[in-house]
Image (cartoon, rainbow, N blue to C red; front, side, top):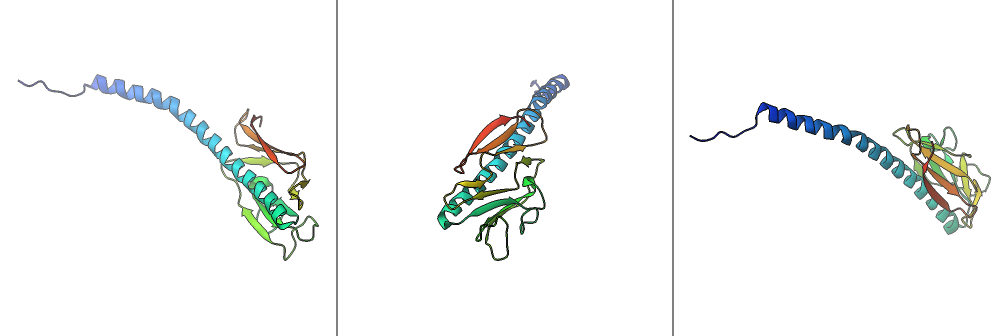
Length: 168
């Protein structure tokens, strides 16, 4: 007579319990990983746009501004996490006027990420130096509290440096 093979009910319950224990540890870690990845993605988008604005100012030998924009066509009307735009300030008056070229537009950030900055506009002069906003810091946080945030620090030459694990 052949021996029958298979799992008993007790073996199946033990395996399901072990899988449940492993999953209960994995889900919180995955949530933290996802939130950290979203913060990194959003700070990289902002750094990329700031670098682009700086390089365009040097390339065009003109003042280039990056300002908050909630609608993508005008400055103001929101905060940094609502979106921003980059434009060439042809008359150097610090405002977006008719006929001035909009270079890039960034839509609102999602995922409960917020950007806090001391000014609603950063201005790069024709040398790539930051004319308005020098010495400032920009904080990017999400809905967590603690040392999960990221911070950009501007120096007067227009370069930004990144600090991680800042307090939100």
